[in-house]
Structures are given as C-alpha cells and as structure tokens.
Image (cartoon, rainbow, N blue to C red; front, side, top):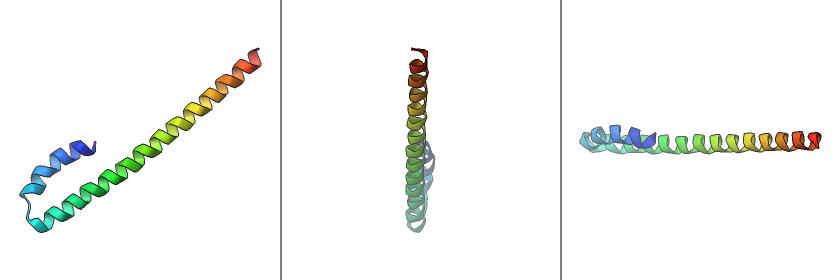
Length: 65
C-alpha cells in the first residue's frame, strides 16, 4: 500500500520546490511507519485468534476422547 502511495506521490514530489519536497517525504515516511504499526498489530491479532482457535480445538478433542 505504501509503495502504491509512493509511486503516485514521488513524481509530484520530485517536481515540487525543494522546501516542499522535504515535508512531503517526511509525510510519506510517517505514513509508512503508521502502516507498519497497523500491520504488526493485525498480525498479532491474527496470531492470537489462531492460538484461541487451536486451544478450542484441543479442548473439544479432549472432551470427545
């Protein structure tokens, strides 16, 4: 997602005045960091859900035996 944003934004950034370039690149950097945090949180949520599911399956198998 951030790559798509960068592909769209970079041509405009490159043609912008130097003062604006720094701000725009900083904005892209902040967006990338935010996206990384969101992806990490989503991955952790998925891992937790998988662990809960595996625990439920183990409990169910234990009850059946």
